[in-house]
Length: 161
Image 1 (tube, rainbow, N blue to C red):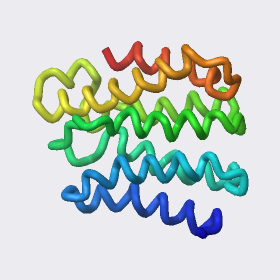
Image 2: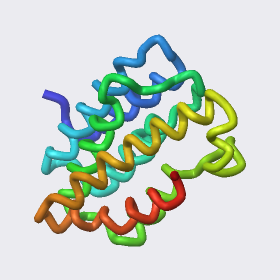
Image 3: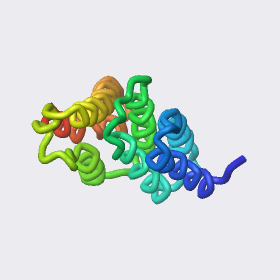
């Protein structure tokens, strides 16, 4: 059995190594599943969850602009975020800040510019699929921690047309 600090470190490594090794695309889904399992672990602290969220964000819109998710990766990344939210340990302001980072169009000048290149379209597709998955879950749950995601996701979707 892996203890919580080692598990968080391993989860971060799994999600971040995919960025360095594009052939490991299946690692995105597996890394997201591992992050979900860590979110379910009561021994994982808020500080450790805060380490997982940036690692998840790196895969929502990977730096490799050739990546267009097609095998459910945005849904699996969304589930990890939803289960972190279910812990109800983050403020509205923290979620707002995190989603603002996720939906940042950089290196594009704006989301409107996404439609002028294949790489931009792929980035738009990946981010929007993730946001829609989180939004669908947040809108259909009674869990207060997950409900907390509705507002920042709704706002993010306004910027990612």
